[in-house]
Image 1 (spheres, rainbow, N blue to C red):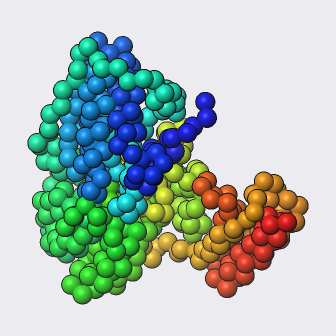
Image 2: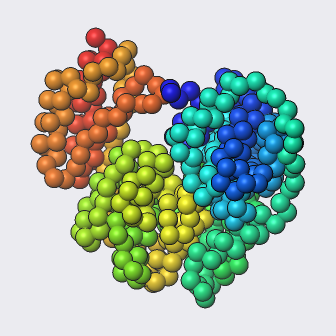
Length: 450
């Protein structure tokens, strides 16, 4: 069936407009309860329990109540976790042997957006066929269950997750002597992340840890790291760590206030596994991963493959290759030997393990990989059909690739939500990269607006 609601990262939208309304959440809870409840009962022969977590945006209270009512009406028990990072819900779903986990969050988006993410009983994203069943069940009339579910609050959820994060490091691992600034984006990590790093011995100062319902991701967090960059320099910290609103992304800032993105963090984790652990079987990036990252891994004989943008596509290719590491330049990093989904705190700890074992500061360790200049232009078009495959577009792309030789690449990618094509060029020479992107974009614009 055609997917109407679910995208690659759940359901997301502007609160009160279109899909994201309390009425929809009520029906979604009922539909999910019916589908997931039936699947769970068929396997375990008992009534399922579904966990609900959320980030700190003000609309979470409203949607939590609506989802809870729908699930209970479908005969499902509900465990309320309160504000928790998205990866914590994935972990706790497994820990409590729940039928599923639900996160109310729009991730790195501003507060006036919200969304829903589902996790299966195994802590992974729901398969397409299950999401399709839930979508189909949205059209069914709601009928009160003969056996209503019940709801209760899990008081020790945060403590359980803190211990889980710490356990992703080896026994005796210590951050003693490390001065860290954390930016919690006024989001779901605000009461969890500081405790993890402090309990491992680091000297921690925190910004973005005063959520008021509307300041999530506002001028802070991984999408707006400027405040963290200034704070690290001002306080003379060794490094800074920025999470997004629901804690599944992470970026670093080195002691000089320079941003360290997801590709650079993945490189550090991969090289640490390669040199100090059992080796790195391979790394999955995306179409947007920096070409310098690919070359650096190749020089160390670490296999690398690209997936489509989106953590689901990254995880699918990781599973197909039986690899344990993958992620995106945005900082969504999956360490599959420690977690079933992208987890900002877990990924940060793996980076810090690398810094400790290499015994090098972050700014020095990241310099082992040369990032290539990357330039992207969003070309607005009247139509996109056939533009990328047009002979004129293919000709100029081929010419650009010839000029770049083996030191760069060209990527043309249609937007999934807007009438535009993203033209991206990267290579060693920033002047050449910008000019080639401009030349290709001119041809794409001419073809797409004729």
